[in-house]
Image: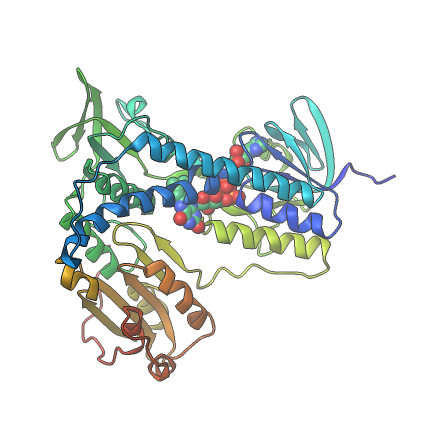
Length: 457
Ligand SMILES: Cc1cc2nc3c(=O)[nH]c(=O)nc-3n(C[C@H](O)[C@H](O)[C@H](O)COP(=O)(O)OP(=O)(O)OC[C@H]3O[C@@H](n4cnc5c(N)ncnc54)[C@H](O)[C@@H]3O)c2cc1C
């Protein structure tokens, strides 16, 4: 008789938990996965996927507007928000079902309900105890809002994806990637968007030039970014809401969305009681093997609050399955993780910002370009694409690639391979470009930018 019911119990059937459980199951491990909401987690149901579907929807506004420059006559287009939300819901429902069947095909048992630890080897769900040799915490994170007057009136990205009606006016609070993405979505569908940010520029932590240029392009599209200010209070008025900022602005709006941060889901999990160390923010502290301070308890993904992205959660989850059940120990490598911001225009980025590279390497060379993409010559759109390479002067290694403009996420994914391989600037130079493309600029930048150290935000 085995000592425990399972070799591993995973708590949370999101990106990381599903990937880890499936991989473990494929190696013959006896695995159960607990889910309190719906299989699929944030990415599939409340994040990457529905968000990107709405981004695609919003981009049609540009296509209609640009078509005239290419000879098309487009009758005045109209847009049906409930139809898009219904189609999106159908698609995420389909994906959730696929996740369920993939888990079952890997022999993973799905346990519905809220899971909590009773002791290091026992998980309780709906009054029943289940035991396992190893426990994997993959419970993700949840939007967090500050405690200010009127906060009960606001929505988060969760509800923004399910609104019954498209708001005519929306105030979005926050300058992170979720906030700028939703600003682009609602702006594309024709809502009047005000974005309130605490800093001077959006996207703290990204390369300074990307931040500045994205802000300019967003403003150019009519998004009203109010910077260096915060929301003091929100009042419900006769038919709408009034947002008052610390700068004294009063903004009447139909909807207030907060995207000011997310908190790891570790409440009511029983972790502290059994000795699992957590940070002040509630994130599970793990080592390079994703192991917590309790030997048989591991944690991955957003609940560890390191790099909160789906492919990272998946890679961390698979690393655990390889280590525990395939005799293939894998330490997670968190360096040079590429990422995208599906703003309008979008961003793709990999490696270090100029500022971070200067701090790490001292002397860096910068190559950058800003140009009007070919498509915009006939469409008449004023928007410009920005590209930048950050090079360690001593080794000539490209340590950062950044782009703002159409297809940036697709282009940077390819360049991420070169950065991960440690490619030098001369190898970029030796690469022949694809013409005519925007991407070819990355292999044809010759002139070093001459400038002094940048100021950090
Ligand atoms: C609006 C938005 C857009 C995003 N866009 C992108 C993007 O474009 N690209 C990208 O890479 N990432 C994106 N992300 C981030 C990405 O969604 C997360 O990094 C990823 O989902 C983390 O996976 P996870 O497995 O850690 O957690 P999750 O996917 O959040 O899964 C955690 C699961 O655990 C369940 N759970 C929690 N507690 C319990 C419990 N006690 N018992 C049982 N079940 C429990 C939850 O219900 C949930 O299903 C986005 C996030 C948001 C919010």
